[in-house]
Image (cartoon, rainbow, N blue to C red):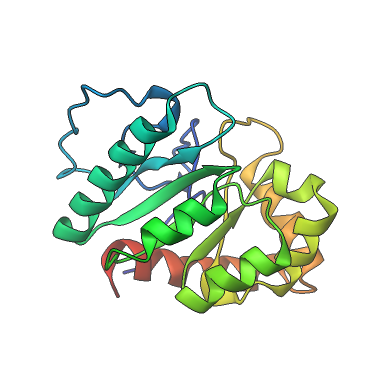
Length: 195
């Protein structure tokens, strides 16, 4: 597939006409309830953002039930997932290990190198945005992430722009923005189109 837009923003709340952003749907852990109904995932590129947020007031067992239901559907439909993970890395990794998923994206990654290496070993993607760039330990992860497991994002921020995120990530990785664009386009093609 030939990409017409210049930048891929793998997770944003502010889609732009001149950037590619996958469509997603899912029940965020902040909105998990015991009486949940899963959305129709069919017309969407990815399932998400879903996951576990142990800093949230939402009951953990409820979050976990909703998360598992989404992962079951992702496995059945052969769709990738975009994860929201806060103070729950171990439970998320343990749960993910029970499913055969087509792609897993840890969005807004701000974890440690040890956590990142565990993600790399399973072929999970890490996506970096504004908060990632502010964390000294995560800056080291950005430098070390294999290019085939890398994404950039703006999440809910309108600044910095996706162009600025790419420029900062490229600088940290000692590469050009064009090379980063090429690598992320390949990752996007693999995640969305399984190619």
